[in-house]
Length: 291
Image (cartoon, rainbow, N blue to C red):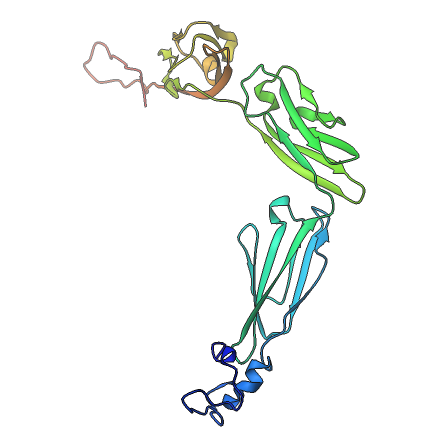
């Protein structure tokens, strides 16, 4: 029907003389003047705040139709006239579009751009090698509060942890106070990881634990019972309960990059069957073995 409107109808009759009036199958019974004038088509309006604090609430309402479908950033969809997003993150700001449909199955779309009150940014130099300075970045605020693993806290905008270690890996939370908002961002700090441990995770009591790694130029092994070694392929002889547990190896590569790998080794206890006496036998041999 939209294609008929540009042909400039004067009497609802097309150039070939066809009249569409009094046709109940068509919108307005075929009265194209009413259709082309806009009568019966949805007139969509959107209400709600288009500028909100990051981490507060996005709330938008569409009207002017009978059915609605919203689409937006971060694969957002909704079929409600009103939708609410609590604690929106920066990825959820952007353009939201609603398509309204009325009982005549006529559709009209409208969009609105939702943006944060204050623009802030955060970042880090991670992933990094162990031992390198860990840097955290934030901007756009009046004050900052950083919280991180192992009780870390700082009020600097761009704090630095000079000598990094695996204990510093994890999520860092920064609270950025701006003129109008308190914005919270989460930053994940990861370390460069390379190499792979080659070792049995289950060792028979009294047996041998052989340790190795696939790459690296220098190595520092540590484990239960005070175990330490600088060899690439150390061994633990006569494996006992005190040797079971968590082992680590810190590997240094040719570019002086370090990484620490962790793994667990369990003990396979020996099974000693009860002695059995057999009539007429001078001696009984008892064998011990691991199940």
